[in-house]
Image (cartoon, rainbow, N blue to C red; front, side, top):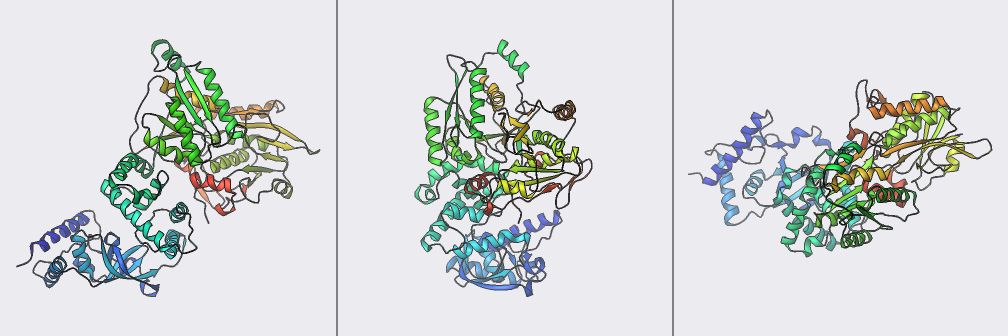
Length: 630
């Protein structure tokens, strides 16, 4: 009589089999011979014999053996078959004695396929074992752009032979190595490898138990997010209760990071609404009980970026007339400095904390998870967090107008654009500028160079390309080399305009609903993004009085069309250096704009590689850099 365990395993197999039939999918076990047509000619490499995770065994090599199992490796053969009796004997042997003989597998793209031992794998999976002993042979695919992540894994495996750590995106292994002060070039000490494997398996256990299997991110992706807030040592040093509490605190962060969307926040409180609220509603804060707001800056007050934000802080102090008290914390350029500043701000009584740089967002995250009663914001783009709302401006709108201005000034159809680093938002600004140029002068070219490069040479760049009109750093300040300026025949500069942030207005619009007790809670798996522009009044342009009436009319005409919503910059046919991006009547959505990794066809130059950037730009890139193409 057949052991009842086989019948239970078969029911699990039959259930999975019929599910896939209903979904019109192949219901049998995956076969490597089916998936890789040139399997026999691919290079093979002996790796060794060791324990491999059962969840990474996804199929068999031989397509003839696949029909004995459902896709979940549970048996589907009749209970009176020879297969069933052999499976049952293996089951009893494992329960009574343990299976000691290793199976044999091919490893292909970080998944394992069984050459010998399919029934042993089936039995061990049925028993919910974590690992099985296996002789591993690696099948090396031909290298191409689609498997760069796998070859990064091979670099990682050569220095730290761990199979369980699987990332979903390129760069994960390099980032992990950086957390451990290592690289992917030299072998790591065996003690470190063992500690990393043990740390990861502990994290994996809690992550999956919490529901990680329901997310599109891998456990390794989750580990990187954990390491942005907590140390790797904590995974072995802390008790399971502490780690579970931390995982609970971070779970919404995992959900937000896993979600492909942002909750775009609107400006629900305009001036008219504010006036009405002032008259008829009692605010949550007043002069006797002011709202205390802290601003954490990564540089000193002399830096242009910080200076612009401080100007906004001063604006807030004036607008709210002691209803809001603001405090600045400068030079918070390290994890410890940020946390110290936040602790001081909380002791002072801050209920709202703004970080003014994306480089400090993960230092803020640790504190944001601890203090759910305090609202945290960070000036960053495309960083998903539930505990920290991010804010930035649609600067590309103003840059489009500056492109129109530059085209009006360039007699030789050549314009220089000095970008800083290829982070989110920067490419959209550059492309919008180039589109503004082409709107006025289809023959003009925009020559781009990057001030964040190690070998950036402004003078050589300008002279080599015979350029007279330049777009540089933007600011409301009237400076000869800010914004769009022109090199005169005598070598002097004439400034004609600039785009700039109105951070005071931005902070005013964010703080108004807080003052009136708006404590809305967003969906757990959606990160909040304040992404406002010219229409909302948080961005504007400064134009020289020397410009002609016709020039001003053209630029302001386009500006009014953007404000009214009648003109969309990234609408219609768009052509990059490599081909068509969008066709007629198509409009890019906010994710396509933020995540741009291409340059418009009238741009001369390329997006620099990470290795070409200086230390400051690399630090910025690590947090909010776009995916740089090879």
